[in-house]
Length: 136
Image (spheres, rainbow, N blue to C red):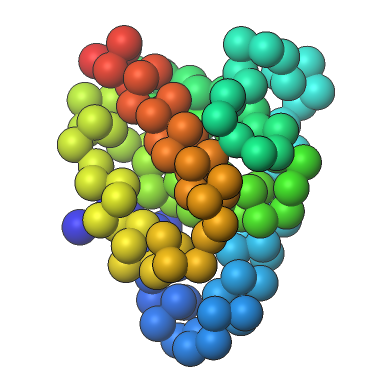
């Protein structure tokens, strides 16, 4: 079972039957994210492989994984919020064990994102896993 925050998103998606409503919900999730400090938007935090500008700033404190993220595209910022709900607060050793593809499939995202957005989402997941595996 995923993090409670991610389960909340799954429940919201079950309630929202129309994909346009779900899309708007993802965007709203992104708008609710705190802004990433401009000083953290540097090449080291930039995620390659995304059509838009994406930055992820991971932190590991007391063995717990968390991250902040930002993008110049609203839908991508929303996808960052979805990943935040999926990964934030996990023990760093559990990050690699998250079946991100399976969890995101519960939202139907794969069927509704462009190939470029899907590639960007995979790149963000790979960055999260890489950082966590280096610290585990």
